[in-house]
Length: 172
Image (tube, rainbow, N blue to C red; front, top):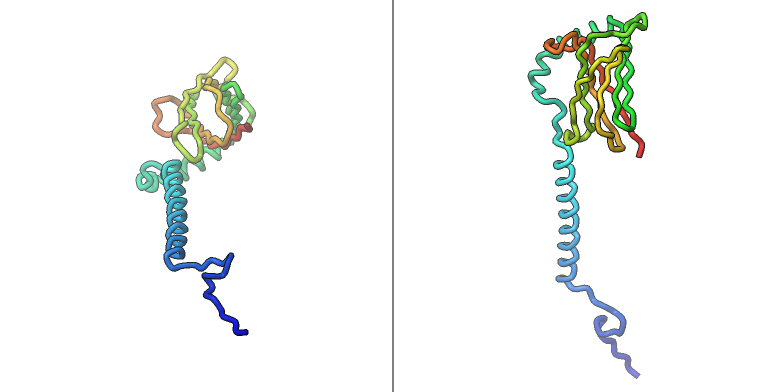
């Protein structure tokens, strides 16, 4: 008895892979990769502009002046305490080396997210009779915040006498 063999495609339960199927699989694979990359690029560009400082060239020219201002501030030996309650009450206290409160300053704070400028806001704090500087803002949503503090002898002064930056985390 002679045995005859049939082609592989004719055996029951077997499937032969054709060239057009391989091409279709490759095209679908690369289309998915390109779609995911395009979505990631869109989200990366739309959520963070990449701008760390406005006018970086001008600020770079004045870098040495900023360093000298930081050294002058360090020689003052001022200490500061900034508190922001969950209900939006902002309180800022600055004391000298002896622990006496510094009064008659013009204090401004800028509050914003580290990754976006969409929720940035500026506040001017007003001094109360105890020497605290206070303001009220709407309650901050949970997450990471950066607070920049600038205090001047008067609102007309171009350069602050005191600067500080704080990072705030509000738990969900």
